Length: 301
Image 1: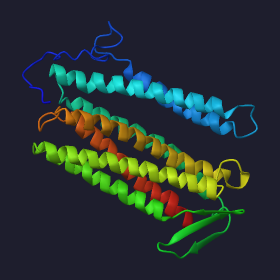
Image 2: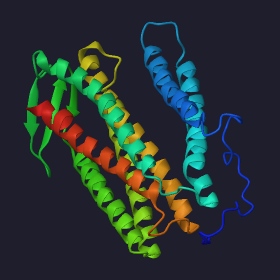
Image 3: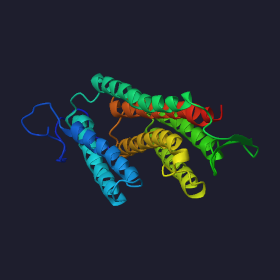
Image 4: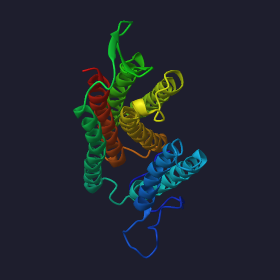
C-alpha cells in the first residue's frame, strides 16, 4: 500500500499516538520520558534479580517482575515515541525529512558512548590489578580458543560462537547499508530484502549470545554467585548484557521500519527513520567490535 504525498489527511488512520500527548502541551511529548522510565526500570529489575542471588532477603521473582513490567513500559513508550515522531508526520506529510531527527539520533548516540564508557572504565579498573585473575592457558582446536581459569571454573573466552556472532553483526551492518542505498535508488524490493536480512541476522546474533550465556552459566558455572569470578563476571555480563539490550532495541526498531516498508511508507525522498535506525545499528556493530577486542581478546593478553 503506497500513500500519495500530496495529501495531508490521515487517511482514516486514527491511532493512539497521532495527537500530541498529553493534550495542551503543543509540540511537547511525554513518550520519550515513558520510554526512559521503562529503560531505567530494566536496569533496576536486573539489579534486584542479581541481589536476590546474594544474602539480601529478596525473592528473584521481584526482580523478574520489575524487569518484565519495565520492558512493557519501555515498548509502549517506544511505540508512542516512534509513532509521534515519524508515522504521524508521514500521514500528515509535514516534515518527515526533518534533519533535526538525524541530529537527535547523533546526540543520543553520544550519550550511548558515555553509557558504555562508564562500564568499560569499570573493566579497565579491574585490569589495573593483577591479571589474569587466575591461571590462563591457550588450547588448540578448529579455531584457537583462550580459556580463562578461575578457581575450578574454565571459561572459553574466545570461542567459535564469539567469532560467528562478530561476523554476523558485521554482515548485518552491510545489509542495512545496502538496503538504505537501494531505497535511495527507489528499488523497493531490494530495500525490503535488505531490511529483512538485517532483522534476521540480528535475531541470530541474539540467539547466539543467549546460547553463549547458557554455556557459561550451565556448563561452566560462570555466574555472579561465586566470589572467585564475581568481579570479572560483573564486568563481562555488564558489558555483553548492555550490548545485547541495545541489539534487542535495534531489532525492534528495524522490525518497525520493516513493517512500514511493507506498507510502502518510504521512498528516495522520505527515509528519515531508515537513516536514523541505520545509524543506530552501525553504532551497535562498532561497539561490539570494540567489546570483542577489549573484553574477549583483551582477557588473554
